[in-house]
Image (cartoon, rainbow, N blue to C red; front, side, top):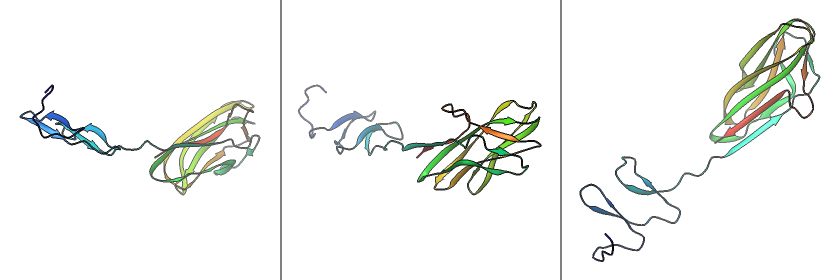
Length: 176
């Protein structure tokens, strides 16, 4: 096709073969992207998909708070309101570092979508030892409230957060 001058082309046209003959694809708009069509038989111009919107939120629960109840309670300073973005989703992660006064058990959960959803329970075999426990969840970006909750067996459990190490944390990673 080098230097062919006998064709009805306009500036910017693309020529391709459909397997039988040469075909003309007129130039697309300045904002279009040239891609292979869905049947993988030739090129086509499309409006490109824009990049994803990514955001995150993170909060450190109040260090030193204690829990002695056997029913789930809100963790102080551990709630996040999700943004509202159609088609978006949040990955939610809750991690607690807990010091127990006696051998016991502790559970943390993630409240989202209007109720307590995911729960992780850990048996703490030794008194005066610090243990980590985590749980994760997914939630549509619908403007809902996300909270970390906890409960335990006998004895006192203390939430630990060592300054600048974020030993306990509630966080979201939001994509739409």
